[in-house]
Length: 104
Image (cartoon, rainbow, N blue to C red; front, side, top):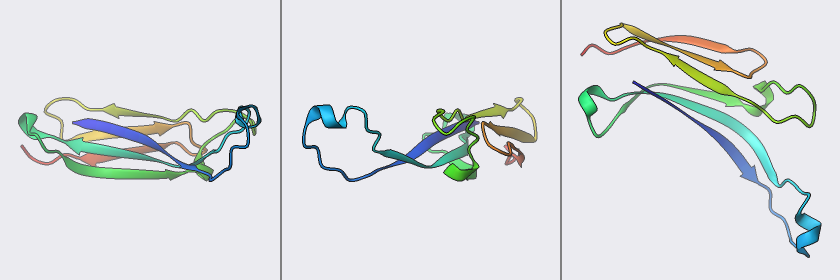
């Protein structure tokens, strides 16, 4: 059982007239977060995606307009269990989802 996450950013096109001009600019724009719950039975080289969550940038909680987003995901799973629970925090409405596991 594995949980992966990634932050997806878009780089805005820009022209760099001088190095000093661009040092204070942030050209990245947060688009979304993606999380994947993977099942890899017995150390197999390939995994199966059991569930995917996509969180748009608008759903991320920010304390102020210039604060940095802090999104985290946690996996609760016990060997031999029939389900896994994924919790995603740092959102305006946190996500908690229980996913049934395939039979071994």
